[in-house]
Amino acid sequence: MPYRVVLPATIPVGHKLPVVYLLHGGGGGYRDWSNYSDVAQFAEHGLILVMPEGNSSYYVNAAERPNDRFEDYIVKDLISDVESRLPVAGGRANRAIAGVSMGGFGAVVLGLKHPDLFVFVGGLSSAIDVPSRRFSIKRIGQYRQHAAIFGAWGSQTRYDDDPFVLVRSADLATAPYFFLSCGEQEGLLPANKKLASLLQSRGCKYEFHAGPGGHDWNQWNQRLAWLYDSLRLHGDIDVAKRQ
Image 1 (cartoon, one colour):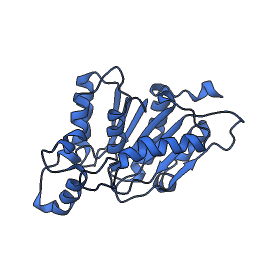
Image 2 (cartoon, rainbow, N blue to C red; image 1 turned 180 degrees about the vertical axis):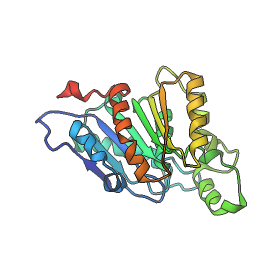
Image 3 (cartoon, helix red, strand yellow; image 1 turned 60 degrees about the vertical axis):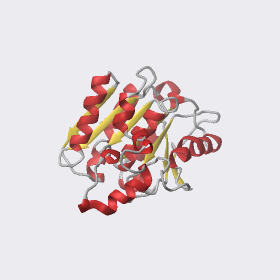
Image 4 (cartoon, rainbow, N blue to C red; image 1 turned 90 degrees about the vertical axis):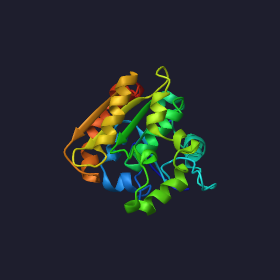
């Protein structure tokens, strides 16, 4: 399983840095974040960036594909491999996860299911409503693909990976901070507003931004400054203290 890493130009000997895991969207790949955005600038501020391959998995353990265990891959194999190879500081306080579209869904779900691993979650244009999308004859192919990942409608596996269900049962004392954004021209805007409203009603720590743009890297790239500022302010990943 390949993954791409962006490191600061120089790292003092014996120095360990916080890490941000960046998840790509559906139809993309592990090179997307570095190829199509300016996220490498984060490394200039003392962060290590890790971009794994997620195929079209939504970063969960697939209900009907026994070999597609992408949740286990991220939270067990990947983190372990990264921390054994790179000068990464261990522990929740040094670990954030963010994603776009399918990757935003993955970041939110993994953050909710594994609050002990991530202090900060970023979701840009997250495809947050996929498990709760009902059958549509117009999108039968997509529905079948999603059923193979999340299970049949009404199944326990679909329920277990539904972000709205997970937020309702989240432990507020351990939940990470959530940064959410979505373009005003996106069909995903209502679902992301709904998630933000639910986070607010539950008392979760979060922020939500809606701004001009569609479901593309141009819009996501424009949100990176907000994402970074939020990470510094709310993610407990204070790079300045490490320099």
